[in-house]
Image (cartoon, rainbow, N blue to C red; front, top):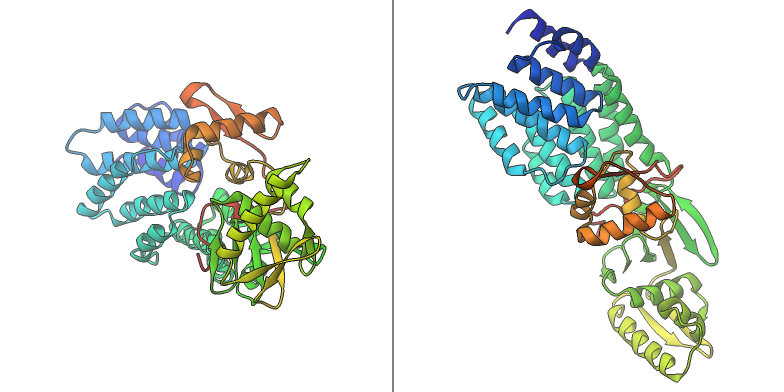
Length: 405
C-alpha cells in the first residue's frame, strides 16, 4: 500500500474525511475508491459513497477477498446510517466470516457491531444482547470501544436500566475523548441527553408532572398500579396485562386510572372509548359488556365497581397512576423514529415498527399535511425527516419490551 493510501486511511480513522480526500480524490484505483467512498459517507453524501464503494468492490480482484469484505462492511455502515434497514444482513454476515477467517478481527468485530445496532433499531433487543455478549472491546481502538459503550447504553435505555446506561455513557465519553473524533463525541453527547430530558408524564389525582427515564424505571418497580399509555398496558412490579390490541379496553382503563380514586360517569366512558356524542340504551349495554371484559382482563391487578354515576377502579395496590407520553399526538411512534435526526424511508420505518408499509405511508402523508415531517427524493429514494422534539426523549415510544414484559 503506497504512502498516500496509508495517509488517507489514517485521516479517516481520525475522523478527517477532507484530509483523506486531499490525498486520493483524483485516483481511481480500488483502494482509493474505497477510501473516497468512506470519506463521502463521513461527509453525509451516502448516495455517492455507495456508488464509490461498489466500484471499489468490483475493482478489487477475486483474490483480494479481505479488501472486498471490508468494502461490504463499509457499505453496510452506510446503509445503517441512511436507515436502509432492508439491506441484506446475510451479506454482512458473510463478509464478517471472511474477515475472521483471514485474521482481520478488528473489522470483523466492527461488522458485528453494525449487526447489533441494526437489531437495536428494529427493537430485537434479546438478539442484540446475545451478539454483544460475544464481543470483548478491550483490544480495539478507542473509537470502536466508544461504539461498543454506545450500543450497551442504547440497549440499557430501552430496557429502562438507567444506571447501566449511565455507566456505559460515562465509559463512552472517556473513550471518545481518547479517540478525538468530533462526530463520535457529538453522538455520545446526544445519547447522554436522553437520560436528562423528560421521557413521560405522570398523571395522578388530577395532577401531572414530567418524569426522567430513571423516574420511570423507579415507578415501574414500585407498588403502584400503572396504566401505561406508552405501551398500552396495565401493570405493577410483577404483572403486565397488555391491552395493545384492545384499544377500547385500554381507553376505559386509562379513563378509570386518571379519575382514581373517584369514579367516571358512563357518558364520559362512552365518549372516551367509543367517541359517542349521543348515547342510547344500546351504547350503555355495549359499555357494560366492555367493562366486563376489562374486569376479567385486570382481575389479577384490580377490580372495577359500579357507582351511581358510572364505574370506578378498585386496585389491589396503594395507588393508581397513569404513565403517558410527554407529548400526545397521532402517529407519535413514527415521529419517535424520525426524531433521531436521520432520514428514513417508509420501508425502513415499517420494518422498525412492525407495521405494513402502506400503514406507515398513510401516517407519513398525514404528518406531512400537518407540516410535522418533510420528504426529499422520489420513488424508492424518497426519505423522510423531522427535527427532534425539543426538550423530550422519545425512548419510551420505540419498540422494545419494558421491565416485566
